[in-house]
Amino acid sequence: MSFKELPLMEPKDGTVLFYPYISKSSFAEVKKVLSGRWIGQGPLVNKFEKKFKNMFAGKNHCIATGSGTDALHLAYILAGLKKGDEVIAPVYTCTATNIPFLYMGVNIKFADIDIETMNISVDSVKKLLTKKTKAIICMHYGGLPCDLNELQVLANKYKIPLIEDAAHAIGATYKKKSIGSISDFTMFSFQAIKHITTGDGGMLCFKNKKLIEKAKRIRWFGISREDKQKGIWENDISEVGYKYQMTDLGASLGYTALKEFQKLLSHRQKIFKIYKDILSRNPNIFCVDKNDGNRTHASWLFTLLSEEKDRIQKRLREKKIESNQVHFRNDKYSIFKKFVRGKSFPNMDYVEDKYLVLPNHHKISENKAKYIAQTIDNLL
Image (cartoon, rainbow, N blue to C red; front, side, top):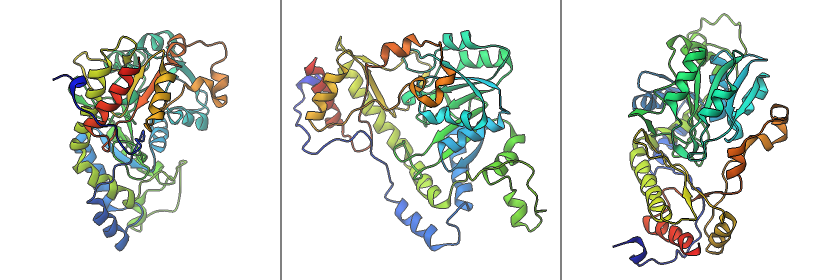
């Protein structure tokens, strides 16, 4: 039986683009935290870090933070970036990828996108690399891994770190390796609408064991919490630190959600597949994905490209189905204008008015996904 032959009923309730996942078992965990000694950063943060490492980071080390942006800023500091340094970063991403460079006085060279994936273009990166480049930053759009092998070859050639913004990509794999276990630095986000949430939060995974203590100090004002709690802290701070720690309250949400993560990921991947199976047959629609056998999509977003994007969005709105452009090209924001004078991004120009994100979360049933996809397919 084909999808078009399935009897589908229009959903009676509205369909939102995102919906936070809160495990039912987390209520008891939150209550324990609120009834105990540790509400801020405590033993549950350590427990969450350990479980996350075992699931996704392999031999890499994990530091939990108050947000994904915190984790990125921490990565940039640990990577040794300084004022006046130059980095290559994606022009299309959440601004959180690039705003920490403004804190640091780092110069950004924006790279164009790959139209097929909306990830950073390796060809664009190649053209931007110079002896001044101190890091390459990539973002796995929607949960689809970038071309990590090619990017790592470039990073190795220039002896600079590759930093992954994996805010969308928890559970993704590249060449059978988990995102989080591959590069010098990888950041994850647990913001409210990500696969799992800690209310707001992040995780930084990194290779170099020598950076563990420094990462912990910078996360907490530049102070060694371990030394302070032992009563041997000498009351000096020798490096600038930040208030970037996660709380046990947040970790209680994240830890319980990790236990159910595979179920969540599997559901998102089913919804993604339903959309793609129906819409990829329509000549007026391109589904953003890459099936080369090298990567597993984390399916945080399902994105289509179409000349009829506005018509699609209007029709979905009439059906009380929310859709939108989740991120926007960074070169159009005033805060980045000094980095883009005289620059052009032809691939970004091409997709700018064509991309649209459809709902994909645990509240979207398979039947509802089929209805949404068929509504679009019948329109064009």
